Amino acid sequence: MTKMSYFPICLSFHVSILLMTIVTVSADIMTDINLSWGGDRAKMSGGLLQLSLDRASGSGFESNNMYLFGKIDMQIKVVPGNSAGTVTAYYLHSGGDQYHDEIDFEFLGNVSGEPYILHTNLYTQGKGNREQQFYLWFDPRNAFHTYSILWNPRQILFYVDGTPIRAFMNREGSGIPYPKNQPMRLYSSLWNADDWATRGGLVKTDWTQAPFVASYRGFNADACVWSAGKSSCSPTKGSWWDQGLDSNGAQKLAWVKKNYMIYDYCRDAKRFPQGFPPECSLSS
Ligand SMILES: *[C@@H]1O[C@H](CO)[C@@H](O)[C@H](O)[C@H]1NC(C)=O
Ligand SMILES: *[C@@H]1O[C@H](CO)[C@@H](O)[C@H](O)[C@H]1NC(C)=O
Image (cartoon, rainbow, N blue to C red):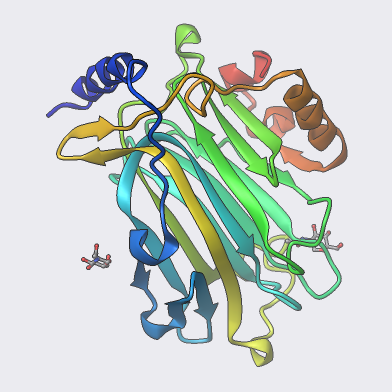
């Protein structure tokens, strides 16, 4: 099947959906997640999943399902204490490399008492280079916080505890590719990146603190699940399927951008001597 033929299936499904009764497709961390990397460094019990990193290896998990649109939530408590050099990645990825789609959260650790950086990126048909970075308005080491991706045909929104931090609108009308044909799987991994994640490798991982542990719970995927070449879901009117930024959400997003954004590719003129990518001049 070609990539282009995916979308009409989903669209026609959507049309039939509005006539149906409410069905929520949610998910369970114990049954819907596969501990896929790092051997017994990845563990799950009683609804709590933990990834760990030691000198020999990191670890990771992936969702058993692939999704084509959805609202995906996870509560994460990042590596506590001196976590400098560790990176906890949490992302959707379509697989395949050259034309892949990807929606990324990455938590860059830091020495005790210094702030984590929340790094985000977005690839459409293999093209990324859309980094935005943030400090958070809390210390993500101390407690679980909810990190969500809302992905529907109109936009992608990144949320932290329900506050939108980033929006990527569907601007196909302006020739900007939008992820809508390739289903994506959810992944997370914890690994060592002290060669770049600490301001270009300035600070090294303190291995005396190992193992480093990141914790996860409360996985929820209100999503269209991809199976046998088709996407099925039951989004209802007013659900994530139609959700966008209302004026309150837009205000919160502006608050985050003003107070917590520390890097925006759309303001990094040095990187784009030929001019900024087209989405940079379109309002979100
Ligand atoms: C879990 O992931 C591993 C590694 O990617 C894979 O070999 C295995 O088949 C997966 N298990 C399930 C149940 O999907
Ligand atoms: C770590 O803390 C330093 C000092 O506050 C800060 O400049 C940096 O952005 C923080 N994050 C990372 C990943 O280095």
